[in-house]
Image (cartoon, rainbow, N blue to C red; front, side):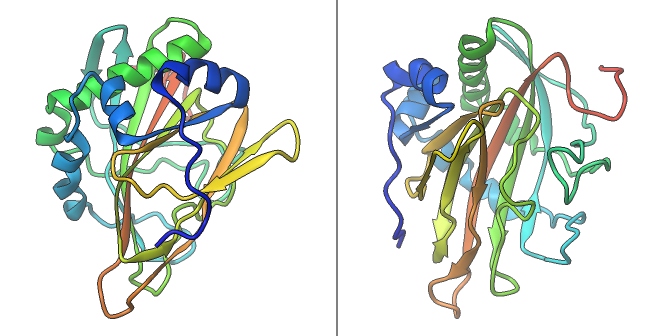
Amino acid sequence: MPTSPPPPLTALSDLDAQLASSGFAVLDAASLARLGGSAGAGCARWAPFWSDLPPDQYLRDGGRYRRRRHGCFVVDGERVDAVPNRAHWQPVEYNALHGGIERWFEPLPPALQDDPAWSGLLRGLGGVASALRGAQTWYVEAHPFRIDTTDGIGRPTPEGAHRDGVDLVAVVLIERLNVKGGETRVFDLRGPQGVRFTLAEPGSALLLDDARVIHESTPIQPVDPARAAHRDTLVVTLRAGGFQGPATIQP
């Protein structure tokens, strides 16, 4: 069971103001569902897809604890369009461990990205990003992650406390199974202020103004070493101007 403080929840009506003032906000599952225009249950319906994530072949710490897929979208107002599979790329300034290389991951399953609640979530997050930065087209990357305890410990953020080089980051908890740890930590770039808490409710989400804060999640371990243990999340990033990449050409 989580031992760190509970998440400091934000009412959906206060979301834009909270992000503007503090650089982060936490929504419970019901609020995230309303943000996406859904009555709920979307994340619960998606959870089985996390059991079919391929291993991450790019971990430079030699670990075997991360599985993931990757999908890209363009959100323009009410319109959500999937784009062809492309490499995930970050500069070394934002990811010292895995930056500077093109990482090709298996695409999202069609049944996931064709779910109406999926488009609703991306559309809702696009609205949040536009409230934060001004209405514009958003280039969205979606990363379903499973961090498990294959080697006794799993690291949700092996690169440490970091920014992603985007405008808005959303971390949605899909499931915690037989794990301890995985505490979320958010720090203000302007000073020593920070918060820590553990996302425990499936479907709850942390939203981050990536220009204002850095974030990390602590390692996980199994509560019962004889049983499978994992932490499943969906990380969605939104960026203005185009996808990150080593070249300036955008599709």
